[in-house]
Length: 135
Image (cartoon, rainbow, N blue to C red):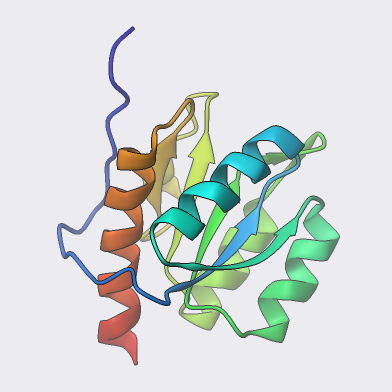
């Protein structure tokens, strides 16, 4: 199996310690894997949200630095959420196994599924760097 490539419009690297990550994922197993990865990397998990409506509420509530968003949530595309995250200035990554083109979502990074902890770490470093520059 070929290693997934993490792509992003920016190559900036940022710190992970205490990075607050909003996770939007409707698959319980993937949410658990992300939670474990975030814990191992020293990040704080916010969520996870498993529906678009819950994710929109969490996005408005703040308390996070960056977001990792599954693009397909129970049959709904996360486009309203990604637009809102961009409006709020929160860096985010789109996690998708369906070939979703992250370039159509502003400055979104892309975390292709299936992913490994190294992939999560790479994308969070990019997002963390963006979060630092916006603060």
